[in-house]
Image (cartoon, rainbow, N blue to C red):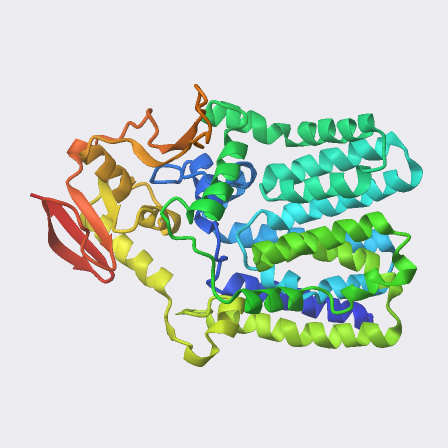
Amino acid sequence: MKINRRILLIIILVSILVLVSLLTSYYGSTDVNDYANTAKYFAGDLSAKLRISHSAFYGLVMSPFLGFFENIFVFKIASIIFLLLLIYSVYYATKNKNAFWLMLLSPIIWYMGPWINPIQISSLLFFWSYYFIKKFDSTNKSYYILLSGILAGVSWAFWDAVVFFIILIAISFFYNKKTYQLIYFLIFVLIGISPKLLLDQITLGFAFSGILRYISGQITSIFFNGIYGSMKGGGNLILNMIILALFLPLFTYKLFSKENLKNFKYLLFIFLSILLILKNTQIRYILILTPIIIYELAPQLNPSQFKKQIYFSIIMILLVLTPYFIQINHSTNISEFSSFISSLNHVQIYPSQERILKSDIDRLIRDYPNKTFVVGNKPDDYDYLAFIYWGKNVKEFVSIQDYNLWFSNSTVLFQKKFMPVPKIQDRRQIWISGGISKNENDKTEYKNITLGIGVGEQINLENFKLIKKYGSLFLSEKI
């Protein structure tokens, strides 16, 4: 039986995407440990305290699969499945073959393939939310508000940053609608996000804890350089914007032609979303917008423009995959596309650091089983050890930050106070204070910790003396 050439090509491309995603040791550059360790926690496989900076809902959904297979690759497999569903969704919604190929060969699809991140499933859900809000706009049927709102809410449940795009949807599609219709949309968004709110109520004691954490994290990043004062904004802003633009479809500008001005609402949404992404300068955010752009753009491309887009996409894909190919059995300083471009003149390749570190941990724990270790010298070094360790022979990896807070009889990690001073002789002065502290329900017995692990260097703790070195891990004992 002969196989259609197009089907054969699709099988080959999908196979390459799967192989590259699974073979590379790259998992993503942002929040990887948060999502993976949350899943390990719910699966009962995490040898550390849980650090929730983002939605825990994705980790909860993935935890049964992670617990069964006990391998981080289940995240990559899930990523590929959601990306393929996203590709097919755009094709199904447009009934346009060009849309299918533009999605399959979109650089952002190949960029996000290996990532441990909820943005893949969140983008899938958000695309259908956009699709149904356009249906509502053209038919004015409230049924479509329900579908769009719930899908947007579930998308938000998986990935916190979707809230900004939901706000842009509300601005773009409801500015000339009845107020009650906007209220309906927001109510259905709330229904969609309710699983996350319920989870936060059960685990964190307050339904809106996760949302407040995310918002406060954004505020500290923008105004206070992050909790540790280390988020000063990365690299060359112009270069970052150029890189982001390269991931957008080449002919996106065609959407803003005079002929399309009648479609003002979706143009407004796409324009505001591009501004938001350029402000944030994170490539992964492009995934939320690319399906929508291709959905609108594909029917407007002539054959010549379509071919040019495909050729350009293939060149971009080859560049995107280069760092991933390098990280098959190796580590490098050019972990993904943006660092590949900015560090092209000083590429460094060395043996896989994850494999080496995993071997070091296994040897250390065989010598010191069922112990509690304080880990440093960075506050979140413990989180990475918990990420790569699988087993039941560690009581707990403890952050050096938490240990030092206990040692100094303190609880506050970060706090800020906003107190504007009146310029007139007013009797009152208002102030707002907020921050982050250790969990009051901390059951770790810090006084009984006698072993410390330094990652890449000796741990910097008073009364701890180096006793043994395991490759890149330095084991110290309390005197």
